[in-house]
Image 1 (tube, rainbow, N blue to C red):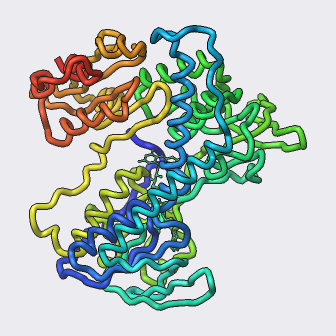
Image 2 (image 1 turned 45 degrees about the vertical axis):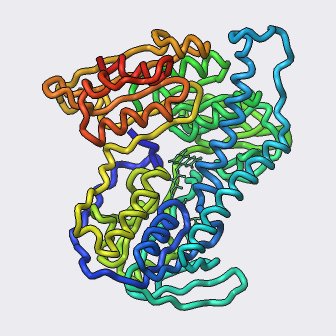
Length: 478
Ligand SMILES: Cc1cc2nc3c(=O)[nH]c(=O)nc-3n(C[C@H](O)[C@H](O)[C@H](O)COP(=O)(O)OP(=O)(O)OC[C@H]3O[C@@H](n4cnc5c(N)ncnc54)[C@H](O)[C@@H]3O)c2cc1C
């Protein structure tokens, strides 16, 4: 279960088997997102001389464009949505709902991202990491050049290098984003004005998060869903729970439709679908996946191969086909999640510094937890029910609705459920999902159980806080 990078077939990455056993000391990291800054920090703490090159902001697209700004906006959207439901908690009905100050929201997003960026830079600085502002490209297997914004160039030699250049939004050839009415996800934090009517193209994780944000903020929203339900890669029951909520909010779903053309005039936009349907609105947002930043990097000069989509294939140590050059984060074509990128970055640093010869656990991408910050929140980890049925694996599925939990009733939010997938023979927890309030926090308990190989009995016999939403996890494991 994952946040998909885009509409591409599963990459049949070749898996280079090279092993590097000699600790290297001069490390060049290209790209300062979660993968790059974690690698730089860990390598420096292990004694390497690290140069980190970043062309925009240390913290990466994750801080500047993706996770952090989107979740800052989700926090505002969630609070607004909550304020509309407060009468259920004993507040007087009829009070005017709170209004969003759009300029204050924009300022808040800028401040949150800047503050996080500063703290990453300060940490790296305190660890002795040399941060270079500019664009890097390889000039050979052991050298790179950095071109600074002022035009100066600096040569860097390295024993090991990390490509952690991330990805950028995919722009289909039928669309021309203009930052005004036709927007990519990077132009929507928030856009210049609150859209009166927003069409979101793409119903994956990113698309539905934007639907949640803008419908909470007060925009009319239409969603183009190319399949028969939203979140095509998620549990069907989970997708259905989200669809119910979207319909309840009045979101128009155009199912089985593929956007094929956008017309723009002074009044707004019209999105034409390939089945003849069209929808006119004030703005359109494209959320149709991403493409890796592997071009203009001189990878061929270093001998590093890319696959046909531009991703850099890696082995379980995140080594490319050139053993002392690593790739991590979105550019590696693995799970495009900030949490996974960070973990890869740390593992890369440890491998470069020879720590993998001690007890070393490889990243198990199948056990990475992920969340969708909609209302209700959705989170999952490990084996999914549909996956198990498809492979013929016997599983035990147990489910408890939050409506059966005291804390959910106290919170006046009984929406959603917890589902646990376990092995019927051993009781080992294989996976699970949570739909509802705090799902992104609650999934951590199931993620820990999956990673540590715990049994359902371990969850049932944990003496949890009462009343708490986590009690639903113990009940679902019963
Ligand atoms: C809208 C949206 C919301 C998301 N929300 C979440 C979320 O809630 N949770 C989550 O886990 N994931 C989320 N993701 C995914 C997450 O943002 C990415 O997986 C993560 O940013 C990947 O980290 P990275 O280190 O690979 O690259 P990035 O964060 O993309 O950083 C790469 C950096 O490399 C720099 N760079 C590129 N080329 C060069 C060069 N030649 N020289 C110097 N610097 C260069 C770029 O400027 C950039 O700063 C979201 C994605 C999107 C699109």
